[in-house]
Length: 105
Length: 270
Image (cartoon, rainbow over all chains, first blue to last red; front, side, top):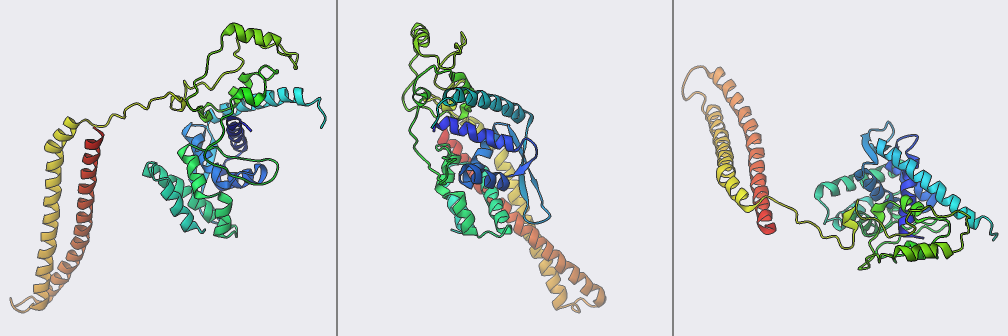
């Protein structure tokens, strides 16, 4: 799969997961690694990249049961980016489906 | 590999990053371990799921892309990836999927610059011709004026451009460092040295006084009880001053070393 494409998909996944609620790194990592089979460790560099681009913000929060957690939330810019990426994703998959859809395996 | 080993190894790999960033990154991984352990996982289990420190470090250092697989086996590959231009990836240009769709979708940051292969501008005429001739499977005509295929746009992220030359980072110039050292740093340093010496002297003095009062309270005669209380007060003062002096000396030495290092850096970079 194309390298850039892959990165774009991961961005989209992370931003989409943050859309409705803030999540902490561990949560994001384990969900992503379960569903799309990436290593947990790759999610943190990605989050850092998104943070440095101003798409997500982070804050530290104590938890009642267990160690403190670093939560990530979507910034206004991140929301815009998510909308953009979603639109692109939808039109992209729609276009591909137009080609692939008619072909049966 | 346990948490300590993992963090240490990651730290080693990230040595080229600014130490502030490294601390932040490691803190996050420590938290990851802590949360995993609190959920009943073993440290080695968590480490295995994280992927090797070398691979993780490469993502931070910017020369790797996560490998993911929706079909099953979990893999993390790092390092060199074949550079697949969008053209080859799609097979042929103009199949109803415009480059706009892909490019917009792909984060420009992730554009990996093709090694020494600057995009060859295609003559507009040829492109239009090709576009007209290629089978249009989607039934949509490409929108006029839209570029069909192109290599990533580096204007927003110039550092990804293969031809990008890193601008010289401007540090303080030598004259500034010399003047600053002569007019400010030396005096501040001397003042700090004076304070440290004064602290040492004061500590010694109070210590000596309280010692004398304890050992020989009756030497000077009279007011025995008051003298003992005074000696105790002096003893406590000595302890407090001693602590203060200790931190003072530590800070002084650290500051001096830091400043010498900073000057060395300026000198080298200049």
